[in-house]
Image (cartoon, rainbow, N blue to C red; front, side, top):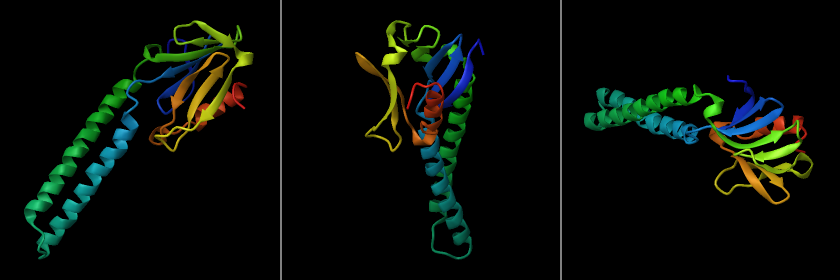
Length: 177
């Protein structure tokens, strides 16, 4: 894929190797994994309730046929939206990594940390990749700290795989303890 070797990807973040550079890229549409989870719930629950109440109605229950059909329609509608999001997700996944936003680059050849635009921020000897608590999720975020600041590499998303595979790559590269 245009010279990029995928090392791993999780939570909308991909780590690629290209010409002795470890490039951290952000994939578009980070909302998709959470939307899938929510849509499965909002489609599944009304659909199941609608089918069960429909069966109960035909077995002589007092449950209204109209209510059963409304829940089935609601579940089907959310299921249709889920299918549309999956189609969109396939288009996003078909993009080349060169089209993703670069968060930062670890230049192994020159032992330097580069920002998204390719400007040198610090030497690799002065940086550390660390896990950090994030208030909005049970998953941690990964941050690279350098002498004059920090860059958020990825905000972990439980629905998109967390950050464990990213951490493993950084540990293997010696960038994270």
